[in-house]
Image (tube, rainbow, N blue to C red; front, side):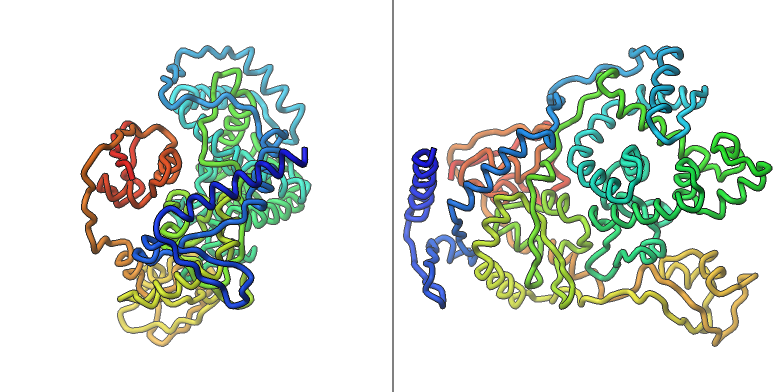
Length: 514
């Protein structure tokens, strides 16, 4: 066994050595003279450091990931073939008797009142008819998010089924934003997020951070359950606030069963629990309805994090590690401007696939040096880091009115009135208002737009090329891995793609031989 390990290690080392000696090479020793960095002439021309890696550590990562893939963490799902036609859900029969039996089983195994009623049956059949394809996509995303959800739910002794609540709230989109300003996987309003220590500043919105937001959601749900001692009512309060649930109980004569007070809840909340029950049913009985997960970008256990030691942008990471914004935004959705800031006493992290974390760790000095030099060359500097204050005192000026002030700070008129005990919309000049802002106006975000504009145009190479047809679930980063020595930037340049969202299934891409 030891002989095989050494042989594989030497084989990997030889491959890396051959790649390093392909073309002109310049050797640079570090200050401590403990290792030698080899940089190609092409790399120097593009001002991007050529990365080294430690093959023994890379092999350890590969072996560990292989073990995890063989474990129960990696569910053996039969994923949907991107080219497969999904059957028309309206042809699927679901009798009332079968549905009653299945709902009764769910009711007996969960702390929720999953009772059959005709409106729930109509909702489930509507989802089967119109959302079967979407449900397959959600199950693919669930493979990434649910293990992390379950870990936190277990920590706070919360029913595991509540992981499905994130589907109802955000369709598992970490940057989802509602029309009233709720944001993230668990849809926190700004002030509620602040209540549970979710930071929002000019660079970071922790409501979009899957880990931090899930921790906050568990704390919030635990508090609600302690208040109502009923998980149905806790979920209703999560949607509309404890006050609305309390009023519904009063208007229903003191009844505390969700179905008995539902008619006295706000309209949105009246449909909230049925949507959760329908989602719970369809996820638990997906196999019976031929709902197959669609492959997502990666498994969470195949990723790792590193705490950044210097401000760095997604663009810089893309150039150095040959990634793309789709991958980075998926793994690091909390960074609003696609920039990871560095602030003392803060631990801002970068999440990447394990093999790329290895490369980053092995080349930290060179990567940060490149990022610093690239920043110094910018015509426009990046926006200044600034944290929104938890509370401000605003002085009313001539021409001000509540709607104008509310819009400026991203809050509601009713919130300003509640925070200040106002009974009318009338204001007087010089009046002081307490405001908990959501959108604190900092440096202009125009620099973000400017940084994304393309100022140079690369010429398309001549010669033979391969035509690649984009498949469902493809990203530029995934496609680049299918062609040796082809980078994301090259694919974008060859095919005039400047936005990740421009990539669509069925699109034909030219891949030139490098």
